[in-house]
Amino acid sequence: MTSALARPALLAALTLAAAACSADQALAPAPPSLATGTTPVYQEPIPPDSPGQCMSFDSLPVGTRWGASVGTPKGSIVHKENNIDMWVTDFLPASGTAWYQDAVIRSAPYPDVLINRALLLDKIGVVFDFSAFQFAIDRVTFRFVDRSTVENLAVDGSPVYIGQVAAWPTPIVRSMILHDVVLDLRAGIPTRGEVTIYGDLNSVRVGGAGEEPITSTDMPGLWLDKVCVYKAMIPHEQQPPHPL
Image 1 (cartoon, one colour):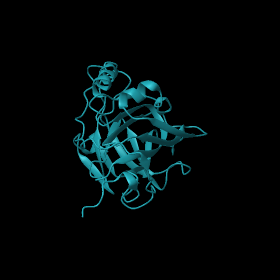
Image 2 (cartoon, rainbow, N blue to C red; image 1 turned 90 degrees about the horizontal axis):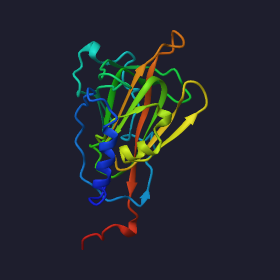
Image 3 (tube, helix red, strand yellow; image 1 turned 60 degrees about the vertical axis):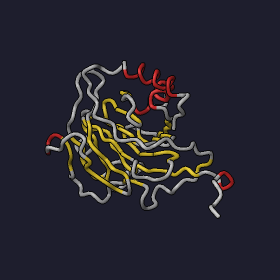
Image 4 (cartoon, rainbow, N blue to C red; image 1 turned 180 degrees about the vertical axis):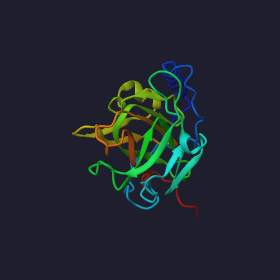
């Protein structure tokens, strides 16, 4: 997390980034943050498929829907899975006012990235909240398929970056969200792959909107799957001694 000495510079970067957003794009309140922890010097990954570390959506029936069409209030926690909470919020377009439409569970149409069932975002945002984890987090990953006109990204309540997923690793995004973003893109249309965000995270906000479908069975929007948390560990020799 961020030291006290570094905060003025980071706050200045966030202020500049926030100025790029339209004044009429109201943001939902950020989830609560954890206390600042020790920066890990050694990373021990937890397998993403291990119980208690991933949100995969496979336990939810196809057709499960949240958003304006079914009267879900913004800010509602709509799904809990393996210590990860997901709540719904606005989607911010490239211009104009915020949108709030629907998030739907559907059978995954891209089996090279998505598994069984996945979350489809159409003019809506979701926040993945990791505050239930009692350990320092090394990184968070999630898989995506980009059938969206533009995407949203924010970390730990930062200003929302509005742009294509493929543009997320640029320096301005790193300075805005205070974490490095690494993309593993797979060949093909649409753009799809896995996003990795490094740091002791409290929350990640993602949003997407649909565009005209390519075929009658290929649903537009931003698809998400396998939101996974990895644990950061401190080497044994740097841990405090056991009490006598």
